[in-house]
Image 1 (spheres, rainbow, N blue to C red):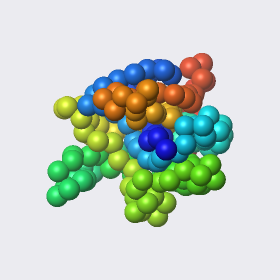
Image 2: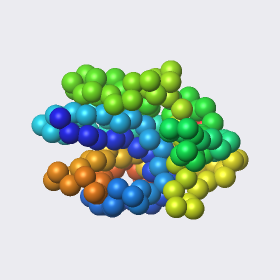
Image 3: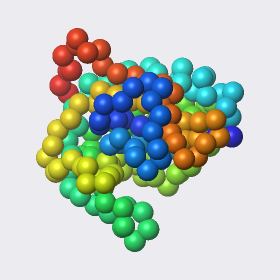
Image 4: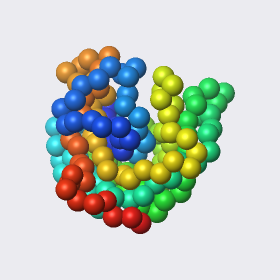
Length: 166
């Protein structure tokens, strides 16, 4: 089994992009999971429709919080939003139907708290708004290299389309 994550990027990225594990673009984690490598393409096919349906959802940044051990990881919470919560639930169902193992079951479905980690001085502020316009499947150890991440699939709003407001 290999480790993958589905995320909504808040900063520009490209399909196939590789970046160091310490230099993530700002993102909202949707779901972390393990799945057999042979099933990764099947999972991308299952994740595509819910990801495309959620694109265009308007999101608002909430208050700051601390996650992780002793609250040591600074994050910006994302205010509850039905499209984002539905996307998370649909992705969890897709992973389970493909035989995957969700890595953070306590933070899944009713325990899901969408947030954007504050990384190296980069962050969003409470009240900032954004459009869910990039959902990606990320390989957490491409070619067995745990020092980098690779964007395997990227679903985006068409650039010519005006994002709908929800």
